[in-house]
Length: 271
Image 1 (cartoon, helix red, strand yellow):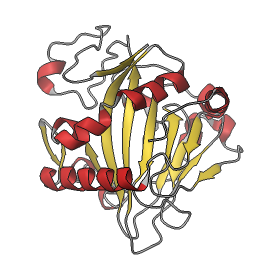
Image 2 (cartoon, helix red, strand yellow; image 1 turned 135 degrees about the vertical axis):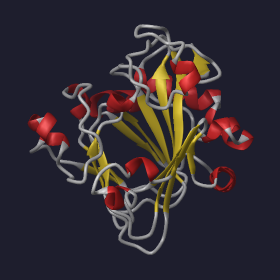
Image 3 (cartoon, rainbow, N blue to C red; image 1 turned 45 degrees about the horizontal axis):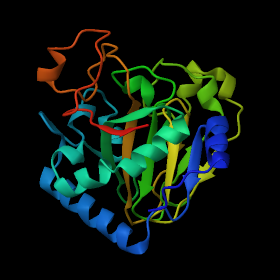
Image 4 (spheres, rainbow, N blue to C red; image 1 turned 90 degrees about the vertical axis):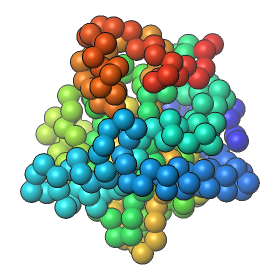
């Protein structure tokens, strides 16, 4: 893995809210990641996350647009909790160090991993933010996005609004049916240029959880698979949102409690 981070990369990430790293994985590593994620997804048999009997698409069935959302992407969370090979990948200290260096923090915990799979002819992923979904509020939170297939302009590569992380907040417009819904919350970015981030398989990107980002529709008969992981800077506290936290853990939490449960959110790097 290409895990060394330069100061110029840190500077670019801090200014723009994202960073693309070409050839993050070599060919053998890419094969292993693909195999591990494929097996982990198969083992889930459609269960979206551990501890919650929600199947892919079922949580979108609360409105008349459920059919649309079920065709944006398949999302399977916390594969590290149910597959040992994925656990080894996600708990890698070197990747944790990369995240900590880019975010300029002393410690990094896993918030959740997720496989994101755009099926053939899948709908676009509208412009959105990540951190407002989560159970903590930190402007430094970030994610890695590893391309398991080539992510192209045709099959649903990521797009970013550079610098938007400096002007967004924790209001959550969600991932809506309309591509531009996020700009109703953050109208100052409605006229901002976007940047496409096509990536060869094995490349990766990091992005801040408050960077406005989205993805094209998949205009091809092939899959666009990615493995991602969201990171929480160490020392964060519970903000009252359940998100992916299991019910038994939630019952023990009060707003303001430290999120330092190593079974749920392992500390993978400490400076």
